[in-house]
Image (tube, rainbow, N blue to C red; front, top):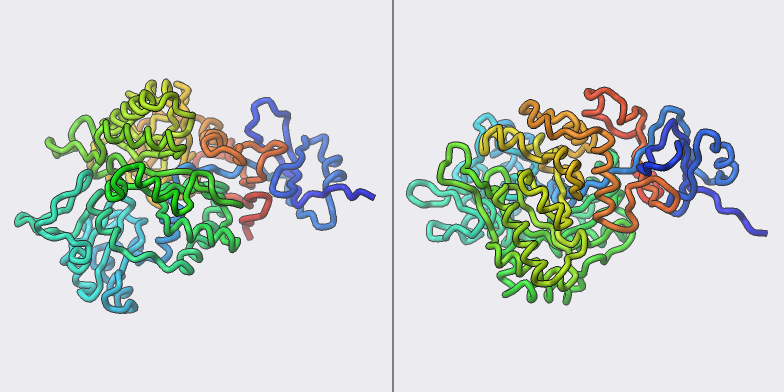
Length: 544
């Protein structure tokens, strides 16, 4: 006797947004072995139940439920957020005295000589002084430990012992594409940016693997609670990748991750050439696509310019007539590196925010294509592409993917306005123009720099509301368009098994809501979270 297959999970809902334009209305899903096995409309639910329900089938049955594909965030720092779990929680501070006190508390529990490192998810505008601390102020927390207070992915502050450990003193030159802040006499004040931060981080010891894996598990569970099914993690070191692998093997990941090996120019130059750098990675077993289960290695992450403080702009910064930001690569060097990666089968995502940087990157991609021939779609990616407005047509013509993050206007809006002015800040992430031009663009958050909740980002994409007011309302898109950018187009970049759709044969990655995200009032959308999230057919989150 042949036993019929039964479902691991059945979801009966008021509506299922399949993201397939031609599909008939769907209100029920059957899930087996991590995939969607069958769907049914209102008239077919009884037949689906009869065909797929078994004694061990889990059933979610609420008439008001609305099922969406779980979100695909194509630029989200899962590993950095996991590291933050272990760092000093300076995000709790509201002035420099409190920040120093938090560092002091950690130092008192840390053996002398060992590093004290903060979490990165904060900004100095949250402090009463509205500035970064100095090395001297951090010395008030400890002189027995090197200290690095991280802020986002591009900036950090070292205490005196940290400067000494990093080999940074009055005679240390600024690094290409970054700087070391100095007092009038030329002495470092503690703040390092871009290449200066890369130098500082190079001397940090790796985080304890067991603690970092636990941080990954905690962070991934929080991601699932916000409806995320997949992230593309754009700054992972080889050591962190090994922790990822062990966490995946131990069942500690509850969301999919497509990791990118962080490859700053300094590391490539230290290897001697881009070929030598790739040789070393490949000798250690790294290659695109490795991984299993919920984990994959996507490719490499390059950095071309900075963020709010150092993005490469055509026009000068507000109040700084001689400053246009930083560029870490020349056009020729970047084109050569990209061409080499394409030739060897390595995808590359390049961080760039400013219009001057975007122009250089697109020109370098064009040069690379002249060196190696047609570049496969999705092989070279623009990460952020904030001020891409005037170069959208070039990106479309070359088929270059763009990952954009409305959430950065939540996390950095005030800082960007202060550095760039309101007009340029309002021009960031021109969704309407990108969609209307046919650009291949996907959505994300850049968390922990931007808020995590995808629905908050969709609220911003559709209203352009930010903590700094409405910025660039002409760039807004509809909710249906925003949802598609957050599912289908991101899945297309990542490739199989991701589809961003809810049809038979697709991965069972679901975000299930009690309120319809496509029709609820804007105010409800802003903080909306799911009733349940399913990743690879398993309940990764369910509200109590």
